[in-house]
Amino acid sequence: MASIFTRIIQGEIPCHKVAENDRFLAFLDISPLREGHTLVVPKLEVDRFFDLPAGLMAEIMPFAQEVATKIRKTVPCDRVGVAVIGLEVPHAHVHLIPIDRMADMDFTREKLKLTQAELAAIAERIRQA
Image (cartoon, rainbow, N blue to C red; front, side):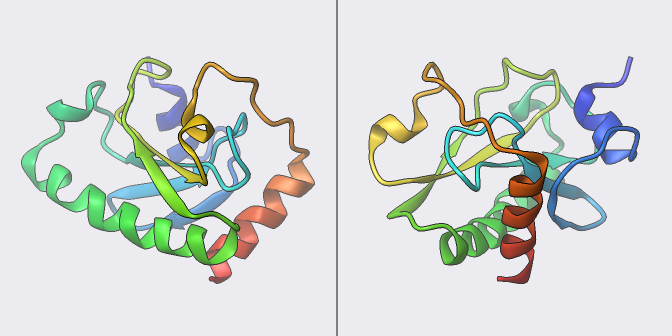
């Protein structure tokens, strides 16, 4: 059974796309910790991040770096934090989260509730950066 991220990649489930190439997709988290919280996923469905083939592993962080640069230009923050947790969805992914302090990356705290229009506007700003 395809992961929810694979279904997003295949266009079965809509997302607020931030960036894409032939190997990766970056889209906004629909339950973000902070405005601009973005997920970077390989298009190849692999459950565990460190099981990614060497080529994808070598390419995912430069792709994420480009996205993080756009996030930082768009969303007021001190830096963009990076987290690889891998328990939420069985598909390797990287969280890019605009942060000002450590607590901004606390995954146990309440998530933001943004409307689809708000998410769409954030994604557009990041894409245009």
